[in-house]
Amino acid sequence: MALFGALFLALLAGAHAEFPGCKIRVTSKALELVKQEGLRFLEQELETITIPDLRGKEGHFYYNISEVKVTELQLTSSELDFQPQQELMLQITNASLGLRFRRQLLYWFFYDGGYINASAEGVSIRTGLELSRDPAGRMKVSNVSCQASVSRMHAAFGGTFKKVYDFLSTFITSGMRFLLNQQICPVLYHAGTVLLNSLLDTVPVRSSVDELVGIDYSLMKDPVASTSNLDMDFRGAFFPLTERNWSLPNRAVEPQLQEEERMVYVAFSEFFFDSAMESYFRAGALQLSLVGDKVPHDLDMLLRATYFGSIVLLSPAVIDSPLKLELRVLAPPRCTIKPSGTTISVTASVTIALVPPDQPEVQLSSMTMDARLSAKMALRGKALRTQLDLRRFRIYSNHSALESLALIPLQAPLKTMLQIGVMPMLNERTWRGVQIPLPEGIDFVREVVMNHAGFLTIGADLHFAKGLREVIEKNRPADVRASTAPPPSTAAV
Image (cartoon, rainbow, N blue to C red; front, side, top):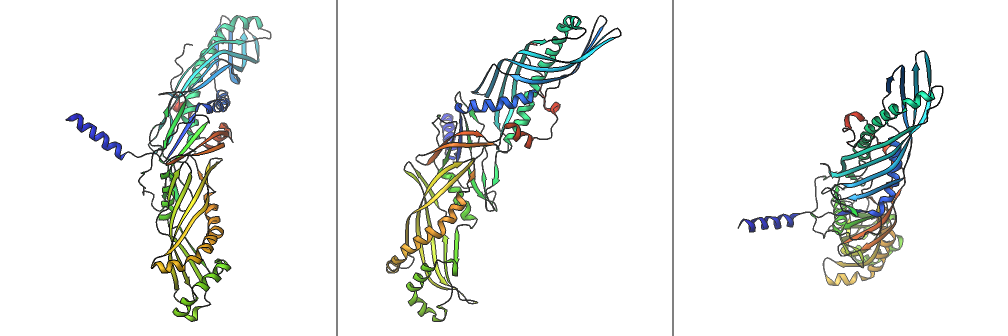
């Protein structure tokens, strides 16, 4: 009995589970590009390593090594992979670091000093980034694991005490190798948990689209990694800015991502677009009023001729008053995505009236309009853009079939008015687009759109419009490295 009860509860929980409106998959095809950009950033970070001064005494010789700076990173072999439970793993083997430091040597009353170049060879670094969802729904680097080691150091000492330095070089380079081992992992930990998180902070979570509507891109769960991709589920829901707590129930099918040929895939369900249209409907944006000169001249003449008898019967005195044409969407439009394409169904009221100065309106007719728009999606940069086209159009009377027949002559001119006067205004807004949840400085290129039953997917490659260093420096938080640094690497020194 307990088993059946547990099964029932599981089914009930599944029935109320909310599907994501937007999914993003980063495939292994993107890792080479990400690795190259990441290694440039890593090289710059390692150059910030500060190694403490190294002082010592051997017999009557006193030495001081100071101002140690990393000048370059040379990579022989590196790999970046997805790993389940770890998300991202970077492994660098047999690399070398160029170093420059100041030497000072005192032997009795004799002093020698100057700058010298050195190299740390056989550098191995293995670091993993764990990604998770924070309480606000943002993706974060929650932990950084690190192992680093330097197998050998080499310094070409010269000058007056070259032979002395050759004797001391074993002590000096061993001490420097120990200190360098202790510095690599704290730098990587800081780069991951502080600097990379400042980059992830540029991904929109709940942000305004315009003055009326916002969008919620909060993660619904932690990112999931496999050996070939990283999947992220976003809520992908719009909301009116005046009703920030309003939420449209998601009854659409869950988007599915199967492809892995491109660097990244983004999937949108019908819910994504339905929530946008319902949000604008609730915000009162889906209505249009044309008065006087705003009504196309040919349509104005046709409407006056069509309703001439009604005007004379109602009030002949207002026959020359400005004409008003009002369109008001009656219910939130709905999106339908099929393999053959994407359509949007709209039902609106059309009211025709005369507006005499300083007098009440004189309504001539009220009708219902059913329209079907085709929608073509495209990704430009990091914005999802939509191009709308009016495909089907029908008007009918709210009162009688006979009046509906009388409206047939208005069918073509009203459709033309919509195509010429209304659709360009809609497309001007929809073509501005909605930002996809990508960090600043990364754009989509070479996209391809694929329609499925209930959702669409867009495959694309990635392009770094800005370097990681540029974006991170722009968004770098005020932090203290020591407060975020973990214990040094546990690798053998």
